[in-house]
Length: 389
Ligand SMILES: Cc1ncc(COP(=O)(O)O)c(C=O)c1O
Image 1 (tube, protein in one colour):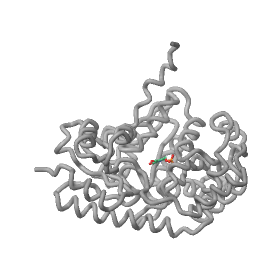
Image 2 (tube, rainbow, N blue to C red):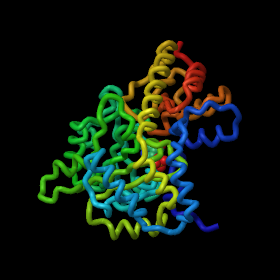
Image 3 (tube, helix red, strand yellow):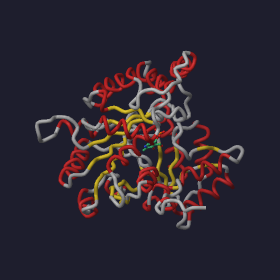
Image 4 (tube, helix red, strand yellow):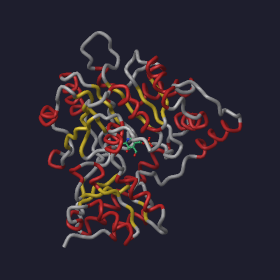
């Protein structure tokens, strides 16, 4: 057999998916591992997808998405995110995952470096390594309230650094960056002429602090006359907001002037997003939004229940201000190898959790619990966690 491209074996496995795949072969597993909303997709969203199938809207469509969907996204971005763009800056993608990959494909060549949060979402590393780029972790530590340190970032920049990845609200920590922190990151990126990839897939889940879009800040504070987005790619998704993980629709928002390039990129990678899926997402945007608020309230209520149960057992966790995860310290039980521990915990106790090490080196000894679960499952799962002695 011929060999694969030399860099491909270095693409790491997702430590979350590993647990998910093992759990798929077991019965009676309590699932607190993957970031999967436990609420059903709203009926009007499913109906819109079915109607598209019934109309036979199943053909190829424009690379960027069907015009009605792109127009609705432009309106949503202006109204909710303060991002003012034209239709040619908004590209329908296969989930937020493809939006992230597209932005990296556009900007990173062999050996280029990008700064990624640690702990941070697994795909940032995997996607970069697929391009033979080098992810360089910057830390989000509890001592700093999960905020990045510009001083640390300054030490990590090299002549090869091309991109800063920002994820607020963050997975796995649930940290929400303030306008001030985002402003400092933007100034840092300007100083070193870096692209910013802003992952905002948890935009609808913040508790107390508002979600702020980096692209809006970029345009607002731009020094030259242009006034548009200068250096920010924004990745959004319908997966978490509308419980549409398996429908696979997201979108990438780009600076202006990239439409021809974007068309080529989409043509060569996926062609286009399936029309029924786009109609589902369009219905999600244009239909009632109460179910999003209800899901957020459900995750918030689960947070209260889960933290009370952890407190009662003396298990340490870190307080999130967004997303729907809880970052829990199990270092007293894992003997320096939380990934192996999580596998044993799954096999013996039938509870799936995400090992913290999947999110970077600083996650060793921690696990991520998904709060988008039934309350009873959350409580049974937590009851099985080992308490410190
Ligand atoms: C931070 C973050 N970005 C992107 C994604 C990708 O989601 P999707 O491809 O389903 O939109 C996820 C999924 O868990 C995530 O946590």
